Length: 429
Image (cartoon, rainbow, N blue to C red; front, side):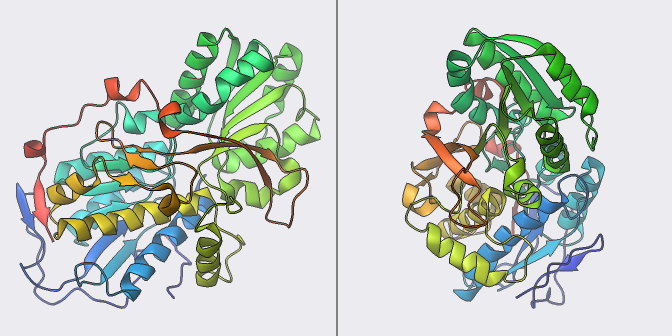
């Protein structure tokens, strides 16, 4: 099993090596990275954070990706070829993400890119991937813009986004809790686009947004924001705060006893952010795409395989982030197998519109990759803190599950403009 103590230096997580004579010819219209018919490894570039605001989630994402890679290699690889990966810390920084993507494609000969938590990083990677025609799977960054105005023919978005979670929660909250709302927003693309989707749905449901408090990334002291919330006395606070920021916010909300009133909608809660803080700091209603105690086929077996692969990892069980990494990678490798080729256009066509049965996805409803936006349309879950946990890992009480089309972001198709296939640089590994 590969070691995953990732630093900022480049790591190759594979026992395979690039054969002598392999040549990269540069960003031409057609790129032949490896000689035709040769059993060269299929190389994936993993754009996973190991530091910064989403460092914890980036390492969780990496473990899900690597589980899928290792399982494929144990079965003989893909098209009879071993899958090899290269990973570098993208540092939760768009400029670093851009440099890493460029390096993966032009120097490390990676034909596919996978990863990202921060939507600014994901968009930076997308721009580089689109320049070369390199397929990029955005595993976990969830700004609505990723499948909207920042979509791409080469990018596929695997997480639920802020609009999906808002559609699952906002209308019911406006109807049953109250009409005076405040927004608490991380001041970058995910926060802005998620809060914009929440605002539109809340106002459509008759709510009034009395304020939107913008929170810089890497904020650790939320006192001033929480005092404003105390003074305004809204019925609902809809928060779009992520990564290490949400850990700090949760503890301070609990300390000020604001966790019960007003009501809180926390959009999505990523499992690595929850695990570090513990169950007692969870409050409000929040979204997720997966939970390790869903009573569904395949869940227990997936948890068993994941925990066996990472027995010494600080997080005891897989959550939504690792799940998304695993599913994205598994489906990419399956698409390459179905295409019978690593040709990027052939693989893109295998992914577009691809349907995934609920039993294979370990969710309540069948999922599919939207051919118009390239987002995975999937079951969206709402949860709250579990008042009667069965063990130390049982932190969520699942409240509802929303069908993919009922949670679909209606605005995305009008904003997403995919370029024609003949405008995409082509390559075959």
